[in-house]
Image 1 (spheres, rainbow, N blue to C red):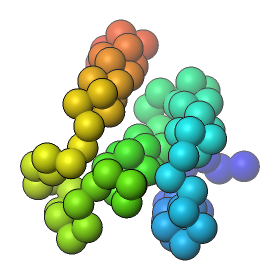
Image 2 (image 1 turned 90 degrees about the vertical axis):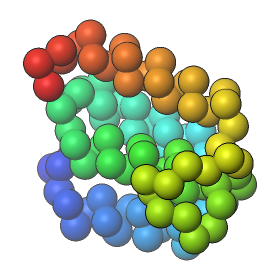
Image 3 (image 1 turned 180 degrees about the vertical axis):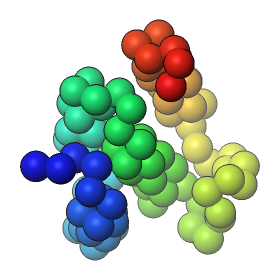
Image 4 (image 1 turned 90 degrees about the horizontal axis):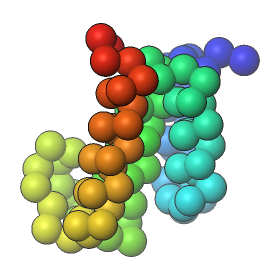
Length: 93
């Protein structure tokens, strides 16, 4: 009911890792929440986690802010375009 509840998002990250839910369904659910509230920083943070911690292409052990050559260019472009579109929805955010 509270889409910005920090503890729920932390638990969701745990479940994504434990159950290997790095997939399009998870990204779609995050996008749906962001469409409802583009300012939901918890959803943005979770999206970052899902995209850049996916063991299918992320290098294990790298910090989130470190360059990862394994991240596909197509993934980076998708994320840039998604963020640009969101910027137009809430330019002051």
